[in-house]
Length: 228
Image (cartoon, rainbow, N blue to C red; front, top):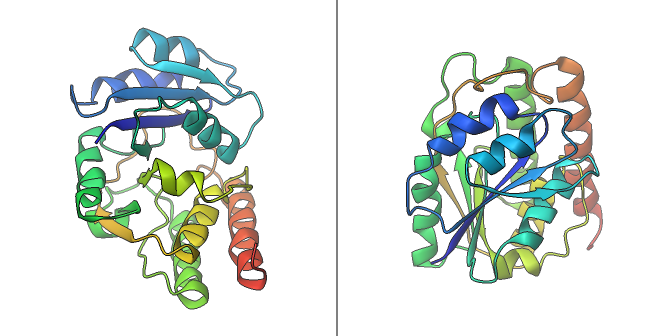
C-alpha cells in the first residue's frame, strides 16, 4: 500500500516542526501540509521539514482536507488525515493502515479506546464528541466511540463519496456517506496528548467548540432526513 499523510493546518508554525520530525522514515510515501490561510510561517516550517505544501486560502477544515486529497499522488492508495497541532502520534499511523489489509474501507482513530492525556481535551469538547458519536449510532447504526480526525480512507472510497461539507462537518459527512455505501468502517485505539503550542481553534474556547458542534450536528441530522 502507498500511504499519503495529509495535514490540514491553520497557524500551526509552532507545532509542525516537531510533529513532522516524529514521522517514522518509510511509514508514508508522501506528506502534504495544507496551509489553510495561515498568517504565520506554517508553510515555511512545513517546507523546511520536507513536506509538500498545498495552499488552500478558503478557510474551512473540509476545504483543507479536500485540497490535500486532490494533491495526493496517484500512487497513494490510502489517505491518512491528521491534525497539525501535535496532539496525535505519527508513529500510530501504522495502526490506522493495518486494517486495510483485511478489507477496511475507512479506519478511525479512537481516542476513547487509546487514552487521552490529562488536559488534552476540554470537558465541553469531550461532551460534544460523545453526543455526536451517540447520534451516529442512533441514526445510522455506526458503532463508534469517537469522531477522531486522525483517520485513514481508501482513495477510491473517498472519491465515491461526493463530499460537499467544507466545514468541521466534513468528517461526519465522510462517515455517514461511507456507511451508506457499505464501506467497512473500523476503529483502532490512538493516543491523544496536549497540542505542542498555541491554542486550539475549536476546543480552545467554548465558542469555538459550540460553532463546530452546530456545524457537525447540522450535517449529522441533514443526512438522516435526506438521501443526499
